[in-house]
Image (tube, rainbow, N blue to C red):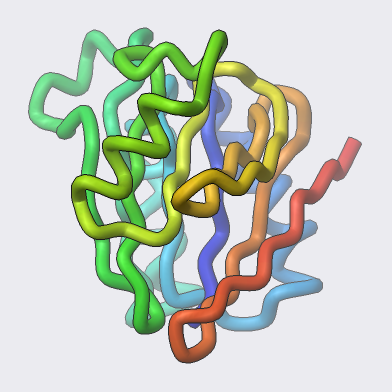
Length: 161
């Protein structure tokens, strides 16, 4: 299964469209789009556009510290994906700017092997008890690509600037 990961778009839905046009050249069809907050409604507002391209895709999003206008979006989600489980959050409640240990612990407690987060605007891939991925900020032309086959992930961090 294939997914595009994004975070911190901060109202730049046009930027997401441009980044996706660049990413799709590399990805082919995509099964899911994950947005880790601070602009989560940017992704949700593109649902019809994304479903036109990838009719069976799923959209997953969590609320970030700047998503005041999205009260119905959860702070975190656990998603089964490609034979594994993904924990996703923006990360501000788990203090990801200073440590990843709380994120690692929370994902593990939710029986996940992958944790997705944002908030720092910096792309990162770290291994603790779980694999932790931050795609970086859409505002900095960054996305990540996740492919999971039989529970084994392959990650690419992309910068399209």
